Length: 480
Image (tube, rainbow, N blue to C red; front, side, top):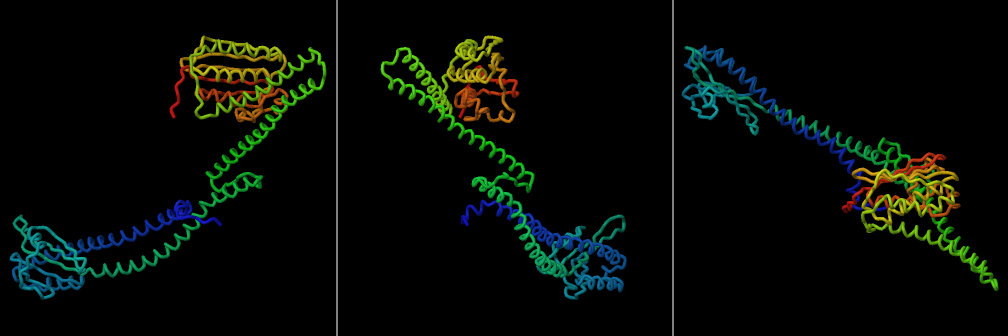
């Protein structure tokens, strides 16, 4: 088993998926537990402050009405103070306008003077509260206000102290439960993260195994990873790519076979002709000329094959340069058709040229000539006696349009996607009879693309084929 490095482990999709699932499950809960503790404390303090103020305001009215601040004793007020002190597990104090404690349920500071900022604020008419988290108590200072004579006068302050120890007790219990809950949750989330990270990355293992099987030639069913819609789409794309590669590979093998045959046949013929001449004495001049003419034809055939290969190699070079110059496209096409006229007459195919307007384009004349020649020559060769090839030239303000249409045998629909692939030939038996290497359309497409143009094909098998070529009138060098 291959050892995985630390860097590969960090980049592992399975590990990253595991961590994401784990964090998504654990972090929110952990944050909630921390926030809940803070919210619980704040909510409890606010609730107790409201409760103390409510009780304090009721008690303040009793203190005013009983004259308690004027040293008048009131059993009802004392009982209420003691009851609230007991209820809140705290302490109640009444302070008069001289800042003297006139009542302390703890009997500790009674008769003493107290100066505290919250009490001063209470004498200014503000109800204040203070929570001491460390000592666990809450203090509320409520002004005792007299509303007689249509004016509010602060006559004293009621200080209410409540024990907040229950908050700590509840938090301790909550934290104990939270720790147990979090541990269980962490265990569950780790298990889920392991399960789902494995499930999410399992299709990649299937892809790897299927590709290995494809390489070993043991995968006859193709790649089928249908776990998810996305993996199904990737499977279809891979199968399409593999099928295309197989077609190209078969075409490449066919190309090697064809080239070997095409290169070998002229050489064999020349060898046979030369041996025949050398094996005879006093060869008649007529026979000598005939054999030499045949040898010349075979040399021309060999030269054409080699030129096709050289043309493709030149097109393939990344640094292939174009020799751009203004070219009269009308005259260029007429010259090409003139050169191909003997072939068309031999095949009994009529070639017609239709020009809609004079067209001048900035092109590499040699490469464009090669591209157009290949299209017209194919239209002639793959035609039937009495057929026709129609070439038209047109333009607009931006592009030059060349259309080559024939009445030939056409191209099967399933082959249209591959005809511009190098080495590919539609009808292999017919192509071999005609000759050539199957590189013509690949060379044509390369030449058109080098000019930043486009080429499209439309064909119906048995009815004919039409090639549409579009080339910019003004060549603009492509930026790297």
